[in-house]
Image (cartoon, rainbow, N blue to C red; front, side, top):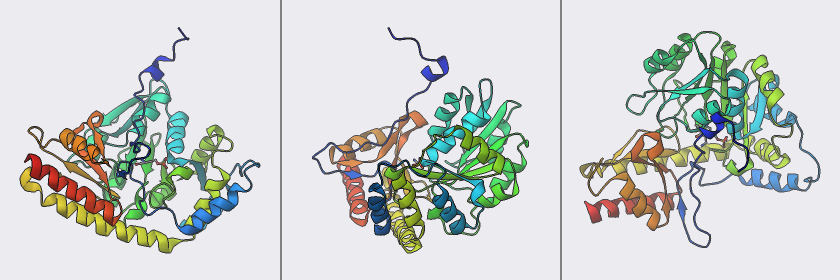
Amino acid sequence: MPPKMKPWIAEIAPYVPGRSGESGTRTVKLSSNENPLGPSPAAIEAMKTASEGAHRYPDAASHRLRDAIAAAHGLEADRIVCGTGSDELLQLLALAYAGPGDEVLYVRRGFMVYPIAARRAGAVPVAAPDTDYTADVDALLAAVTEKTRLVYLANPNNPTGTVIGREEVERLHAGLREDVVLVLDAAYAEYIDEDSYEDGISLARKHANVVTTRTFSKIYGLAAARVGWAYGHPEIIDALNRIRGPFNVTSEGQAAAIAALAEQGWVRHCREENARLRSRLTDAVEALGNHGLRPVPSAANFVLVTFPEDGPLTAEHANRYLTERGILTRWLPNQDLAHALRITVGTEEETEEVIAALQAFTGAAG
Ligand code: PMP
């Protein structure tokens, strides 16, 4: 027998990623909220060029990328840190601000990385209930104790796609002590084009205990490049810099992200396509309401669809039905969502395919 792992590590249920298709079979992958249109051609070119320097370590401080992010968002580069995806930064925040005996608060039916990040730090994850699949600020504030050190809020939320407005985010912040770090995870921010949306930046600018995280994995279509960033008070950024991997963002990732930022036309195109096809998917599911299917209104690039709790049309049956037809969506029984599937908005063809399959499923079994 090998030595025993630390008890708090043994308590971690490993992250379950969205499935990829079997090699050699055609699959429609709508299980990981990726951008089906991919990165802009310029980002791919930049990646290829950067790979010619693969024998050199990358810029350890992601200088040019931080400058590009700062310029694109009107920020100060010394308040930005880049990470191996925003996942790394979410984890580092827990390591920097929570430890054994501390509590880390998040919304139940929220992003599954948060409780894992808390446990990795040796802290206790505490889930606050949601209301109508949406973060409930009162419930979050009611769950705060003197042991709370960190609060994670994904806005829009994954896996539900719901969003809360600026006033609600401000109310949450106002209800927290100053020694609690509020992490606003805005991985899907670029899908929203509304003034009432708080993407975390303006709040992080105003308050020393707010930090926001962003990613190039979603609308920028660079999930495999693993590039994310965080913006916050210089002391928070300093804490993350102390504990991050020294060469945490590859040269290819940095180059691709810089090129992607310069292609805002592509980002707009992806946002518009997503909005159009998200409506199409939402409406089509709505039309299956007589079979008990319901879409949760989404602000992101996926739609959570709820199914009847029992009978032939459960989410579990739908998951099997779709999988057998090569359509991969996300069934999340471990997140209190055994009655739902999260479906990423794909290309037009993929969206029509999943709609047709859901119609056939309800027609065949209903
Ligand atoms: N936050 C949320 C809410 C997410 O859904 C994801 C991706 N699934 C991430 C963060 C992490 O993305 P990445 O590490 O690729 O930046």
